[in-house]
Image (tube, rainbow, N blue to C red; front, top):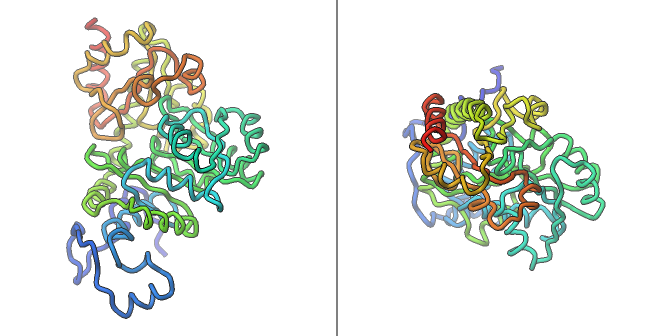
Length: 395
């Protein structure tokens, strides 16, 4: 019996293999919006199965299905469901974590601002309630669960400071109270962390980021058990939030190099974090690969293959007023939102991903004044370090 395929091999070969009848090494983009119905399809649809056969492009497409199969294999999930954006994926996941379509969510404070806004602005009117908690505080999570939270939602590596969540501990605590655990694993990717293996019930990604990896696709995915994903897929069919075939094709193309890209990004992040930690102009560096980071001792238990992620943040000693001038002096890193592409991106969290937070609220999320988030690309680490060093020196 052959051993299971390793990650980089699985990324190349999962989902489809050429045959004499279907010989293309790269699958064709199949843009059809509707498909021939015949007795084999009738047998399935008459029994209520509208997702397995090809019926209509809002229900599913060959390209979307191919990408979903690969994503599920890489994440170790039974099934994945693709969406047209990461926020659409989070929205569907939140709605279908509860049998009645609404409930109380224990939401980590260390979370992407868009997720908080979605719950506060779009889902509150549907009856959702939110109890915030510190992802490192067992007692706060316990209080949220005791207050009736049916879903706990965290980020494995938080936005913007790459704070590590102790997923096995959180999963044990959550399941002990009969609740579900969902993890946004966008920062980590399955190269660095696989939350389902650590006890999570649901995983969500903004596939726009490292999964697609070239800053040219907007997509999202929810992954988990086949039973839970069936409900998510039914919801997608009704709302029409499926990913376009051409975008799904681009995503599948990019997944073949996911391991190579993310490992290169992690090497760049590690080198840059060490360099920044040695600068007098920097008051703090957030990166779990550094020995003094609060997540450093936890990392071997929750991260894979000695990797610490491609994301980091640092705080300038001069405060907020120095962030934009510093960013403007960078020549390789680009001032732009998003992350996970081949190019290094920088953003200022209090102006971009977490706008409008007070100083106290920022501290609750985990960052202070002068914070700059860095999403490392695949540039040579020495060139990247030199770019940031020059930005400090050219004041």
